[in-house]
Image 1: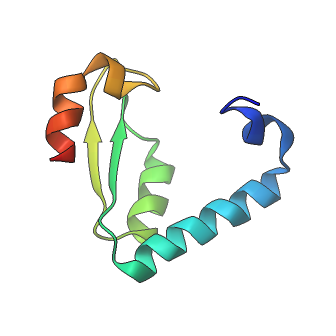
Image 2: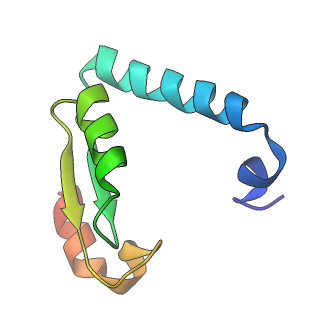
Length: 81
């Protein structure tokens, strides 16, 4: 099994429900959420995320694709402290 397995084998509706439940738990607990991306999030996704988690912090580390922690380890470490 790989970390892509869920995305490749699970129905889209199931993934949507699972992820919505996770975001609802984060919001209900008041857990801080910091979204780190290698490119600017799609505007529609940004609107959805900010609506679901109004206190979300979004940081873009350009040019790092899906692995900003590998391309910018010092910046990601700083964000975690």
